[in-house]
Length: 448
Ligand code: BGC
Image (tube, rainbow, N blue to C red):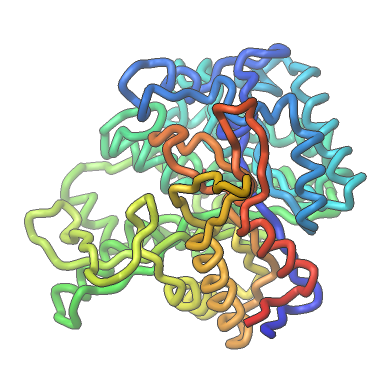
């Protein structure tokens, strides 16, 4: 039996746009994801989050299921346009009421709420003014954060300012696969900077509010490995690591941007993005914990023809999930050790880890997601190894509580430990992976 530390917290995570539905109900404003999914051709099958898992109406049933699994904590996100339909100004009380009811339900079930303030659904009205490329958006985000602290400060003990600023900036503004769908490198860099700035501002507001809780940020990090030990591949590794990981870790923990990558950008553009004096001090304010989302690793080789000198390669003879992401639990251990060594001794939460597989309802009416069970077991072991090596790992949230709208892939990809039968009135079925988690939580350990 592998045992976890006494106060270790087990949870599951979701995000508003991916599960709530009710996209235009009770005064909610339009978000950039509403706009993006309503334009044909952006998402597999032209799926949208209009209905999603209908969690907005079924949250009581969903909290019941969380209770059945035995979750210590639940990570969800707040839809900014439910609270402020235009992004700023007039507050929509019905939006606040929805999250009050959800949080009440969680607290009654003995589940600790952990709220993400921004999991990608920016009010469209702010996008119309330039979105995150506009520095004012950071100011509006901070105002929104203050409203949430005031309304929920005594109810929600754990706050995450942003989810994956790398994905927001790069996938949404450089690769164009996510809302708002731009492919402009300088825009992407500006967005990344303004997101980080807004994080720092919201941390300051949190301290000023005097809330007795924790505030942090969630970064998607994948440990990078060179394809070979050659000097060139090592260099490729450094660039990829700077692009994926350090561009966000370094400002938050060291008040600087990675130099080599910055000079590469400076060679390309006179002024890669606007930054004001003092921004890095704001961004690097102390946080109470770091949230990390880990799914896979990256393997890279040197390629001169690439702008950033690296190209990702896909190792052979290894396992991949339905997302085509390599299953590589050792990468989680390596990543945690690196964070502990180079970045922080503050508690770390795995705020997302999980896998997409092509789940089916079996003849017995159950969902036997063997591969996901194995994936999770291996990653639990990898986490435990890091704890043994001295990493201050405080908790683990599975992505995701339930199957949901997987962004550009729509409903094609299932990440849940609860199956959603979209064709059959959205019936919820606990998969075998949910039962694994139930058992792990009950024992605070793994039977292997
Ligand atoms: C995001 C989730 C997403 C998951 C799987 C993360 O990038 O935070 O919203 O569903 O990974 O792709």
